Length: 267
Length: 325
Image (cartoon, rainbow over all chains, first blue to last red; front, top):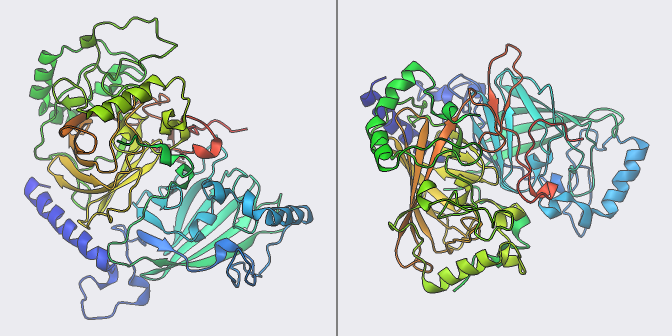
């Protein structure tokens, strides 16, 4: 590619990027401006044809207050729950732990310390997160704590010498237009919501991400943890694209709030 | 890792690109003879100037120069802003260790004014000296360097705190630092409202040939520049130029910093950085990565998650593939 053509391409790319702010690119519409493309094709796609989930996303559900169905409480709006079958299938001992967590929820929830939310909680936490996507990976930047999760889509496997990570290790493959993520190697420090639902470091999450339309992602996660649950169970939320003009994440390093008034020196 | 690893052209094709900066390099060597490299955090005592100009290297599909990958500064960490290899003044561990002549160490990160000092107003100079005087005996919270509490490194300190990764996307350049994450917006949207002040500020950028030009506002000024206590206020305006060499192996960060609350005049900071690739060995500071588990043995460098406050560690605990328990 010559310098001249690359320059032209860059200019065009900038123009496209500007347009993309207002309207996500509709890959199926290219070259057929009037004919309505089949629904499945009218979603943003990468150059390699895979769905492009780039954008800023957020759920409107009350999932983070309690994954299970609940009437209103002083510390939570009501919600129908997002668990298939309504109840998380806890082992008896784990159910007792969940009860203790619930009683202590207004002091023991790791979110109150602004700790990394973990998987899948970061996805349905009521603050936006941004997906940046390349062919090789998806970078998820969460406004809360500004933490970063990478989902690898380059054919790599889980590491042979794993750690216990806060966000686990995520390896994904495509099933048609659905991104299927296998995430494991978690620690046991994170909660699933504000109601004390939890997991151990044996947690294994399989996520399924797919577009319902160009501005809506259907997100499902199946959680398996033989130390805590009697069987695998599944939760699901819809994620909506933020389309407000000039919308962007605003970093939320909330763990600095207790000491940040001490800086910088003042005249 | 040896110093030579950083300098060796990665391939014959890259060597062609290197020729383009050779005249500049030669000039720099004349001005400050290259001294034998030291290991560890201090790699270089001098570094080449890089001219802004056209970009002839690889580009991404959206036209941006491809500078993705792993980078780190070459002259020192945040121990000392104006004497990067001079240690922390008053350090009990090195108080009796004699430093050689100043000219034998890397130059100040303050490249303008020529004396290498931040042009502080008198009150601000006194505040900086007060911070440094209490650094080893922090009798009040304000004397604790915020990075030691896991705060984001901010602008510009993040560039001298461990290696970091640059990822690029249509409309964005994203910096994944050891402490904090910074998004440069390339789509021309306006800055955030002035009432919002942030550790990593708010960044609007565009490419001019080999140079990423970034306008930085909304800085909360809280991150400080290093253990010597230099600082800006929330009124700082920073104009950054990331000038990449033709062969893509290094860049110089050149930032014009204006803040009438703190300084008597605008001044310029310069920080050199080099690129790391799979050919370099991880060294626990500049290049903290692992190789991916690829079934066909493809060599892919990966960055582990960065966790700090959760582990209650003072200086950014990093998971490096060692089992946690």
